[in-house]
Length: 194
Image 1: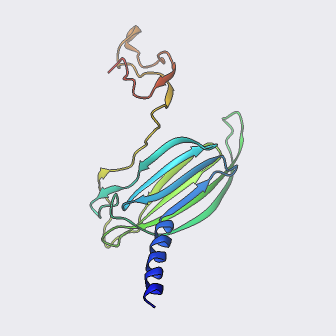
Image 2 (image 1 turned 120 degrees about the horizontal axis):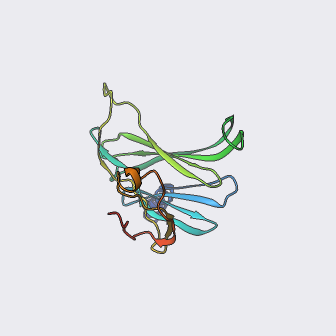
């Protein structure tokens, strides 16, 4: 009987560990987001065709309602599909068909207050937002510290145009024109404008 109890306790720990992970892909399954809790801290990572786009990146925040960046526990998850069609007469493709997969992860902080993180992946895009229920008479929430981040792999490069200083150049019109683009520039390269 003692062996069965010990096995049950070990098995429960394994199930709980796996239950603190969730994943969602875009409709064509090439873009994938993995969510997990690492020592109570929510993190996510993103891959495209198996290649890392974002390494484990932090999620959460600290607010006047509570700390939602650490000591979190996994409550549940829900998957859903998003299908929308809309028209805009001022763009090249006036009818747009949007398709995405949605994953809602429900977490609970140390004070048992819930936080939903809603991830939405289309074939080319990753988006997420935080949703919270109202607690008591609280009419608003103040974010005191943002923990959300993006951890790009060290080999990541950019294709960006630096932002120039304002009110310089011909007739003090900058930044009305783009500066030169620099392809494959390392992410950590500082702007020449400061």
